[in-house]
Length: 230
Image 1 (tube, rainbow, N blue to C red):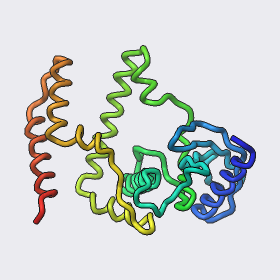
Image 2: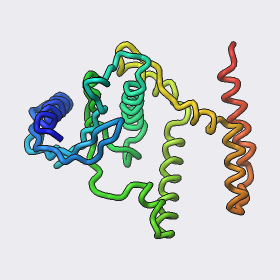
Image 3: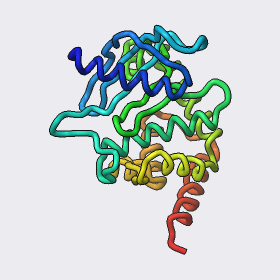
């Protein structure tokens, strides 16, 4: 990361935190954590700010180039759609969970620059690293923890779709549509998911617990009714 890029990232992140925390914030130069074609992720040390400020924060910025700028007002921009999806998702989870949230806390965001400033969860292995490792007990524990967390999310967010949509539409001006992968929509449609789920269980030699197929069929019938024109 060039000195100019680093200085610019610090300036914007400091401004976001100053606005969010209500007091001037000063940050130390960043550690580059991860860069790909979608975003750049950096860790900053908080060297001045409110008394209860964390020691470090994470800044995640949409990756841009001169030929590929961030265009938040472009409803066809996948980068903008993903950015607003992540922003609204984190905000929504923060509202739904009072204690032990299943995601990093969102401190603030800059709509025009495509930056999210998040709680730093510290060092650790990703789920991908755990699953692809050679420790079967650790892999099992990681998957159980993942499924437990997903269960908590479903239990705490069920019936709150309108609450999420309100957040999603309020953070982008003008509101732009949510982006979902068409490939994922096909695989995750209830009828297709039921087939994939059963195939996986058959390969593993596992019998589904009572009521699973009925629950999937009920979900399909419910989503079909909601999607049908009135």
